[in-house]
Amino acid sequence: MTSVTAILVARNGAQYLPATIGALRGQTRPPDRIIAIDAASSDASLAILREQLPDALVASAKRGSLAQVVDVALARGRTALTEAGADSTDWYWFLGHDNAAHPRALESLLAAVEVSPSVVVAGPKLVRWDDPEIILGFGEAITGTGASIQLVNSELDQAQHDRSPDVLGVAAPGMLVSSSVWHRLGGFDDGLPSVDAGLDFGVRARLAGHRVERVADAKVAVAGPVEVFGRRSLGSGTRGLLRRRAQYHRRLVYAPAAAVPLVWLSLLPVAIAMAVWQLLAKRPGMAPGELFAGLAAVFDAAVLPARSSIARTRSAGWAAIAPFRIRGRDARELRERERAIESASADQVVEEVERPAFFAAGGGWAVLLAAVA
Image (cartoon, rainbow, N blue to C red; front, side, top):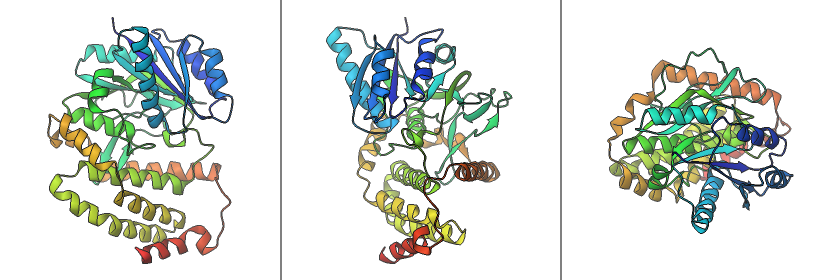
């Protein structure tokens, strides 16, 4: 019989946890075991986990993102299972504190992977916490330049995306993944703690000869994007920094060995050019993030382990992911839509008081850092 272990990670999510745990308990096909980890929350998250999950393995960990704490949860879970003499699990199901799954979510995910044995990663349809008719995420891909992009974002669910299950990757929240493939591929990349962790795992799974699917019948309500996990809000500048840093990391990891020195040497010039472009586009708050992302990528120690992992597990060529790249007009339209949604969100949630001064807005610092670089 197929065995499933649900991994629930919480970080300052006390307001969402009761609904998330209730949804987890209410699955038509409940998980065989639950591992719940609190990531150094400052609210009552740990107490809620212990109170409402008395039969689960509940522990605490250092502060971290969803992807980082998942590794801690699995390490502790495997130790506990070994000590208890329990059999290993077949599938892992990742959930955050603000991921309330539809009652048939796990059942639908398992049905999809059982029908297609080549599918080792399945992702649900992520919908708005307060309006389940709005899709927030349903599959991820990369553009021709390697930037990550969501295939669906803030769209009314009219089953318009239900007929094409194959995707390059899915988001980490709600992801169902084969445990054997997870350990063989080394789990999430340490260089992608906040953004693109699920997408990168999907890329590596396809390079290893497997498939990734999105499952329309599986729905999980989410309160926000994965990079906001455990945070009250996230400014557009910080979000841009996280995404650009993830893009540079993946660029170094995916590049052919002969091209890595050239890509590495181009990081700072590209970062400076992007910072200048942000200034010209009248987005001065984004400019420092472009420079910091370039500098972080230059000293990225997680690149070599990630490249070694791909070289060890890859059985297919990079042509295997070529059909899933989004290019040309489609990429521009999706990117423009993402920017419009982010702008609307920034108007509603402001992380800090906006100051018109040149240095406070980021322009002066961007010029200064560019000159130093």
